[in-house]
Length: 204
Image (tube, rainbow, N blue to C red; front, side, top):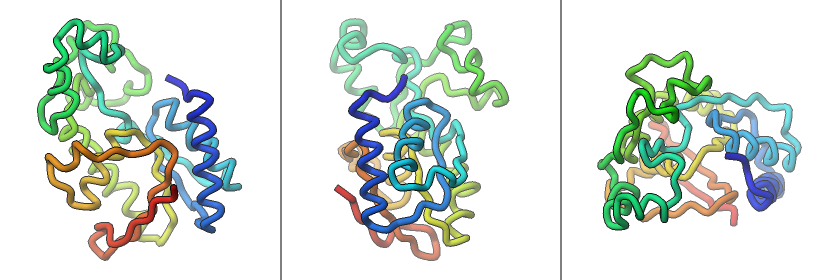
């Protein structure tokens, strides 16, 4: 799914805000999904940093909704009932129905996942699953950049960012479900020696 025209403008506005705050981006980490990559392109262009290295990884992808993937909320509610869909979407540790291996939506048919071991392929995730698959990338790839005192931009998605913020701010399992993230609004973090957030600034 690509960015809408509104999404592109929000990404440009995010870049302008970073430039206004004089925050020079040194490196970017993003998902392998088109809308996150396009967000990076527009944001870096707007703040004059299109030349910085950009690393893409599936562990920053949006939550995989399993058998619900590709349906909008109304379609899901018509099939499973609104209460059940709400439970799947808004619970921390309850997964949606998993994709069957022969389903054409299964990630084994997606070239972006072609080098993953079969047991890593996401077939349906709750937010807890997103957190657990995001953390290895955070520690292995993002933390080394922070240790090198680089300004790191992470462009991801509602649930992968929510999972990262849960870790950074030590937010509880229930509280994180109520966290709403506005599109295209940068959140600035500073870190202590354990890479926990000690200061945040939202550029809205």
